[in-house]
Image (cartoon, rainbow, N blue to C red; front, top):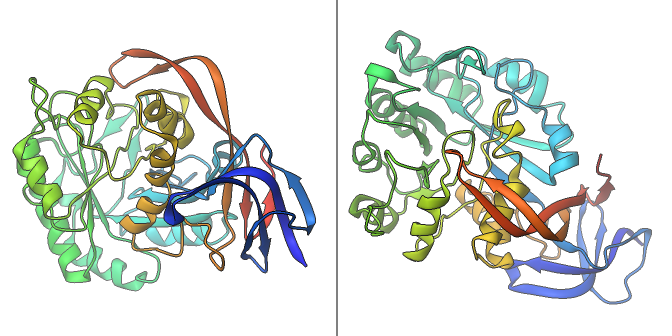
Length: 375
């Protein structure tokens, strides 16, 4: 007997090229069947709703209580439909053990972390205090980063580094070079944040290797990936050709409608849609992953692609093909989504507004093959 059946939803699973109305059953913590007339101990009506693989947010900050920018993953999962949170370097070698023991291990939803190359992680990030962790190079110890990365190799996905005027100040690109050395020593990828120059976009992008992630990839000027004439910059095209992964990382200052329209018009989709949700951006303009996905839907990206960039592609970016799919036998995780029509005011990170006609809203999630109700 199946533990749970979602009845009559529109199942959209790009990993299988699947987009049809059907039932989906879960048993023993896994996807058991997709078809018609399925029965189970717990049956839920999903008619009129979208059933997607569990959403994966590739860029979040969920070290709640241990860092000033952290938000609570469980609360956000209940309201925002995410089943896997990738923490983008909230903790560094000095506090990673606390993050693991007090947040990651007890969490009812999956949290997979990047280790920040800076010893304290992102330690001073708020509306009133903002100090980049890489402004002072004394806060980076490559050997400590390698030691902690090895100690926690069963959970650490890669090395996170933030560079730019806010994050690294006069240190420029040097923290990225150290992060790349640490990552090479550990055999892991890097996720690189880039804000306003210095360093320049080219200095950062040219250093990234296949499998490394450039987050905030559609940021507005300066350090935007597109020229004023609408052509994608050469170093961006070269990076994609060699296998660098381009992640949205919306956040509070890293996503522009103008940049996004130009990149989409040039045929350059991001590889992954993520929210960069933290204590500031959760109040807007990012809010959560579904809001960021909604913006792409309203900019003309089709639903199946939007879901692919928030599920299977994110899973591929972290080398977890067991996630982001509803194939029979896969981990039993799904997000149930309402696609609401109306007039919705969306804002980017520089204050530009866009009126959209669609909004994606969480109607609940399935975790471990069982219904996990929304707030």
